[in-house]
Image 1 (cartoon, rainbow, N blue to C red):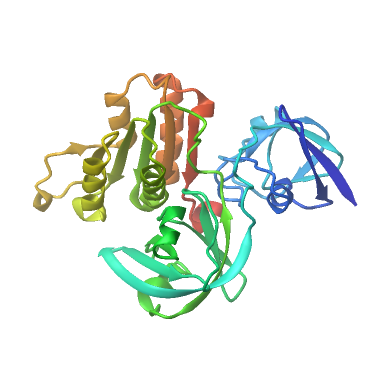
Image 2: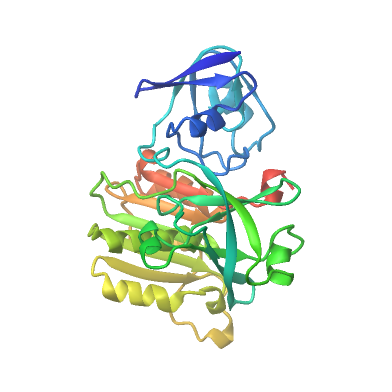
Length: 345
C-alpha cells in the first residue's frame, strides 16, 4: 500500500510505502527535502503536517518536542504516513540531484594532524567518481549493518585532479568505528560506503554574505564549501569562524590562513575555548558563535552555514535568530550527532 505526499508551497508530490519514513522515500525518488542525521536526533528535517496522519518512530525530544508534535510538526526521517498527507516544507534544489549509490573504496592514506583527529583519503573505483555537492556526507556500511556518517572534506572539483574522498574523523573512545580507525585501520583496507546524503551545501542562488561556522571536525564540510567557492569563482563575502578547544585542535590552521590569503573575499577567525598556556594564544577566545555575534550583531542580511557539535549548532541558531535578526530560513546546519546523541545517552 502506498500513500501520496504533497509538499507545499512547491507542489512537489511523491509516493511513500506504508510504514516507510517520508524522508527515505524522498531520497529514493530524488526529492530534495531538508535533512541532516536521518536518525531523529538533529531536527533538521522538521516541518509542518498540514493534512493527513503519520506515526512517529523513536526520536530525541530536543529534535521534536511533545508541544511541537501537538502543534502539527513532524520529523520526516521518523514519520510514516497512514494516509495521504500534505507537508509544509522548503524543498532544497540540488539535494536530490545526484543518485545515492553504494560502492567500495580503498583507504590510501591515514594521517594524524591532531592527537584525536585522523585525515583519511579514500580511493574510489577506477573511472567511477562519486557525484556530490560540497557539504554533503557519506555513510560507511559496517559488517554488522551499522552505519557511520562522515562529511566529504574536499570539493567535487577536486575529483578531476585526484579522484577520491577526504574525510576528517575525530576519535570517540569506545566508538565502534573510530576505535578501529585509530587502532587497527591500515592503508589499502577496503570499506563500503553509500551516498551522497544531506542538504547542507551552499545556496548559490543567493548573493548574501556568508558566515561559515565550524567547531572541531565540523570544519570538514566547510572546507569543501570553501574549495568549491574557489573552484567556481564565487566572490560573495565570506568569513570562516572555526572554534576549537586548544591550538592543537586547529588541525588545518595553516590551510585556513592560506585560503584567506588567496581568496580576497574570505576572512578567517579562529576561536579557542580552552587555550593552554603553552599555546601562547593571542587570538580570540570563548564560544565561537559568540565571537560571530560580537563581530556581526546584525545578521539580517547574511546566510549562516554551521557545522559541528550539536550544542554549538543549537546555540548559534537560537541566538542568531533571537539576538542578531538572522532570518530562520537563512540558517543552514549539519549537526554532528554521535551515536550517543541519537540514542539519548
